[in-house]
Length: 226
Length: 296
Image (tube, rainbow over all chains, first blue to last red; front, top):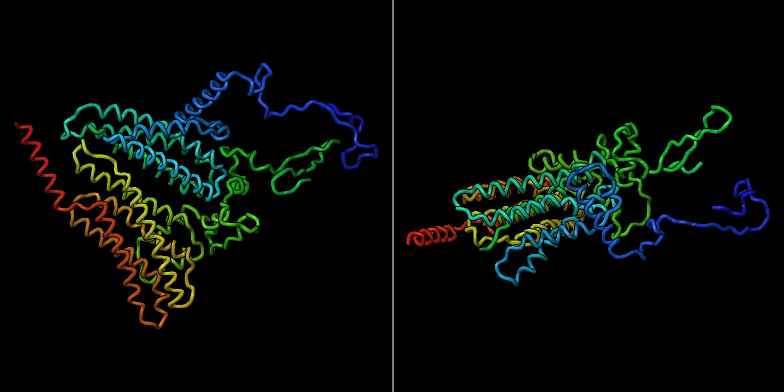
């Protein structure tokens, strides 16, 4: 920034008594993102915005599935991923025979997950964690991906006809969902466990465990109507 | 140069003619929490995590020890409730163990909770109880109905949540008002009562998992045993206060507390886990009908 004060080598507080000079220059702030063409992001084609945001969402999915040390998930949080995951999971968990109560069931599951993530986040904040509300909701939502995959597999396995005396299919489904639950816990512990003092880490991780445990049992107990 | 709390502070070293600034304290955001080499910087670590340690060596200090300023906090701010969450994992575990082992001489209340009532323990014990009751009730019906008819009963979650939270708040309210009007002094603040009652529900968590075993006499036995144990913990906690009063309601009030506890346990068991004989007969009939159909 070139100013007309460059001949002033004295510090600001003890400036001499010539009046206020005009300061001119260019300011480029980092919040006004521009791409290489120099257009601001409001003017770019919609497809570019969608591609960029979708890319960010998928990248975060990758981080949630294979937990690496990265601060992207925490610092550039967004709520698209959690929304997609929770909505898909709520649709998959519908099992009513009548059409009229499917809406109620969807609302129940969705509300349950919403209240659960809010409770876990508020708990972590109350215990003194240095994480903001939306960051925590973002991480909890993204880490749901393994459970969602297990719900897919669960639904597919339920189409296999089985004699009810042999519970082998139940055991397989149980094991798959529990593996996904363990994976989810591992991923969220990697991200959220670091934000707390070691003396209180278990106090913060236990509600997360409870939340994912409840969702895992909802998936296991889900059954198709014939 | 700047404040000593978290920003720059210079140390001038006397090497050479120029001044070398050594930054000794960093703003909290610059410390990488995953950096294991900062273990020697423990106080910085504490500040980073916003950790307000509750003294475990001596009696825990009151809430003025934490580093938030003494401003007027209203109930809409989260910092208002932080003073009820000044607790460590170790202390929580101690309180949980103490709430399932009644000791007639020592009231665990006076030694642990009174100095530092917390809301973490009771709240999450209640939530765990709600979750185990809801899941257990659903599992029990899952194994009892044929596969084609089972649906997850979400209303179990809401019903158990209502019942348990209602009990957890109702009894302390009654006791608080009883102490205020009848004994005319405030022995326990409301938070402490919530604490006691919340921790007393601890024993029901493993019991609610055992309630899934569909043997009727076992369920009743578990109910009575567990409500006796947690009821006696409650009585031990309240006895010193009530006993010092010459009025004759002491024994009756203790019995009422025990009775209410028993009623709560029995009602949860009956609503969520009970197998009545009529249900068993229906199941046998449906199995016989389906087997005769398959023969035909």
